[in-house]
Image (cartoon, rainbow, N blue to C red; front, side):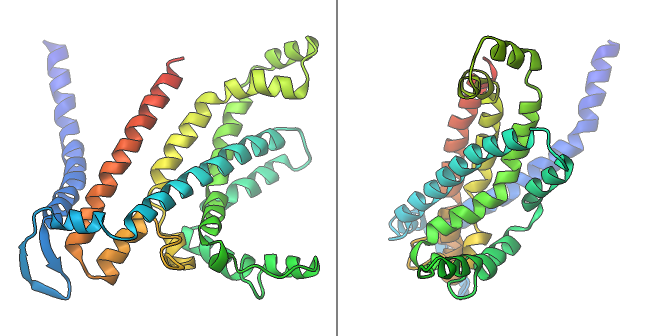
Length: 290
């Protein structure tokens, strides 16, 4: 009886937090669903009408829709490839004994604390600018013509900027996992004559498998919503070359003033994100159960 009363009291105490969380999630989602079925334009907010699935149809048939999906997946896969591979290499590097190891680790992790718009401005005006950026100066010093990165390779430039921001996160997670590797196993492998590459493939990499899976899961959730870097650097262009799904929704809402169409795009984005999250969670579950 006492146990039942304790359980009831615990649920009662948790109820306000759970209720607030549900309101926080359900109210915006419900409003988005409602507006997705409305003809609602900010230029004429009084003239509203029921649109049915027209907003979904127009958003789906937008010339930029499929390209935005492809660009979104390119950003996600490109950033994941750079951060996972680079994170493993950096984690192994800074795990080695060296002078000023703590300071080096702080420097490696510090880009993660830079706000996305600030990071995008730094890369746009100080590093990738075709006239006075660092890359332009290096190209002229080597005798090459400077590259207009955001004009010629806009999507690749976005991937580099976002990967620079997320590389410290992957490095930190993988470094933590790397430090938990049993030293006796490494010593045993060395005594058995295993080389550096063999130890990495058969010992280090399997040990990092769970951490790599977690990095991929967490980063994918955030990378599906990359927005600030695109707005600050390319504004989705040239044309739709660097427009992802999140930026397409922004363009529909605040440039075309179409709240109904943008809400429909938001619902589509939520559905796609949940599909991706579902498969990722199944992958994570299988990996963690091993």
